[in-house]
Image (cartoon, rainbow, N blue to C red; front, side, top):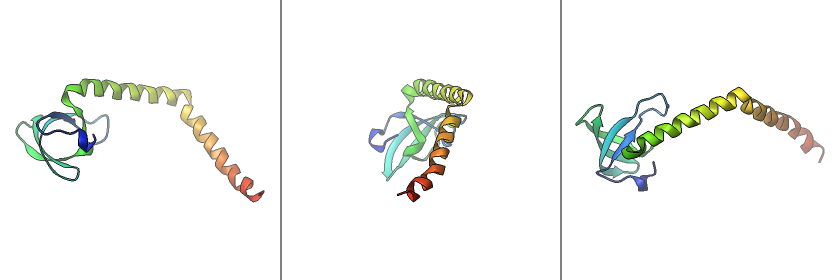
Length: 109
């Protein structure tokens, strides 16, 4: 999340690892420390734990965590569909062909 969108006293969904498979944790932001560091109190899974978190690990306000998870699942399904359809393969092949032809085009000038 953007630092300017984070407010003390509000609960957020936190993910320590940037993998969709990693579970969301519920934290309440207590105060801004400096830079992108915040003091947070865990609500779930370790109630009462107070520690520091980075802005980039906060994904969305907790009230919106279900919507965030749905969008994340939708994005995963879209990526799977594109992989099955060969979209990325065709794109990569096209880029590779352009790069292979690029030196020839420069030499002809």
